[in-house]
Length: 422
Image 1 (cartoon, rainbow, N blue to C red):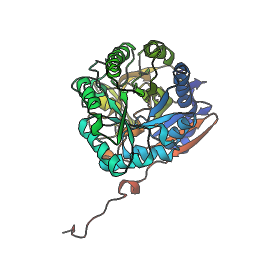
Image 2: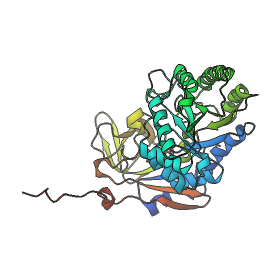
Image 3: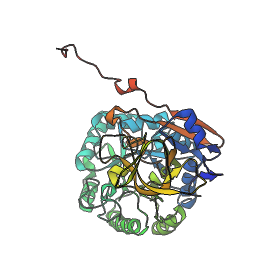
Image 4: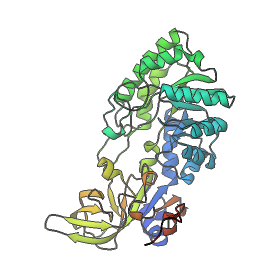
């Protein structure tokens, strides 16, 4: 089953809870997550790769809500982090340091020191200057720190250019020659254990071919390294598995494992996976209410109370999110709408040219596949408080992040005494 959102007698449910009941209690807009879908998607990966016993580190940039993280950590997941704030959240969620891997191209001294003191499993290193910095800080703290080098295999992942990370022009990773040079000079880094290779070629990749091509290139490279006497303990295969937003036909966890696992037979690497969207994407929806219907000579607009500040993916990537009315009408009459928000930008749309049931003011809509890169990319643009987050498990629900209020918008701000009214 892809997710636990379904209709019963024309009403949208999340697991056993009617979504319109949540909307009446919580108000709109809000994000809604299914506990069962999150954990089942993790379980699918665990089962598909059980022969290799990998460490599956959920990529928390996709969704960093503490309840979501706690649910996954409770089922055995580690976490893939990219900032000091995510490290803080990971620890608040109860993730063991030995199950945390740290990626990202711009780690600061403070972030690196905090991660070293915490005792994380691995840093995924993206540049020689970063490697030098981690080595210097490890020496300062008198620690031996494990690092994995992110190699850029220069493979086209066949995805949107903004989420492709494995090409030669990408800011991410190191080329093979540079990685080999680092291994040759590892005596320069007495406080570092250069013990792994990391590869991540992009996100929302729906075919196995780019992965297989990238992993084969990396394995050939690793064979050469090992022939030269270098030992590799960890092989981090990254994430990037695609999901269904519209008419995509992505590979299942089982299909992905069947393509990938044979490549690593007879290899003794500890495999690490970093899924984000695959676990989170279809585990959540974004719920909003229609404020106005605005017909024009050119098209019909449905103006809702959620905007690009809440769900920026359509504006940023022109991404597709299916639109589900919370209550289906019996007439079956449909119209074509642009579903837009209240933000003062022409790019503030959540759906364009969608044929959906005839709408009126007050109707509730759910935007599907919003569990990944939804709230985590939300902002306060136009001085709008960020929405609530809600989780359902079985027949109950809870607010797992309260809706922001106006005072939250100015928390931390102050007007200095020398700024005066005329």
